[in-house]
Length: 177
Image (cartoon, rainbow, N blue to C red; front, side, top):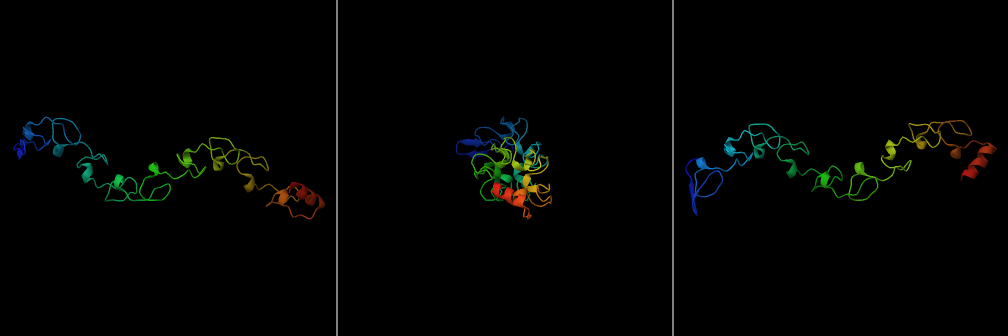
């Protein structure tokens, strides 16, 4: 350690790779944790990848933080994007349009487009708390409503779809269409 190699300009330190001093007298900080008093090979700082002691990040055996497989780091991962399912980038870097409003620059979870049901901002239609447009009760959408038909009093259809043979239903259906 204390024997320097001879570079083109003279003595070369094994620690900092600079000329004119021995590694044992080197004042450069550790190349791993950037603290003084020890060399990188003696460093006790935790791994920069898995945060465990006993090895450096370049030697880490922890699985990839993106695909959870061993043998590479997340920055080297070849798994497809979690948003658009294409290779070559991570979801946080994805340029695909929003799956809700089809505009670029944001993900669906960040979309500010109004709800497709109540037309208010701050939530998606699937999260909407507005009452049903048919029975005026909360907890479901009109298309899922189980309220009986307003003409024949049977479940499974709306009044405008009623096939009951009553003259009133035919008149109302004609007016609705």
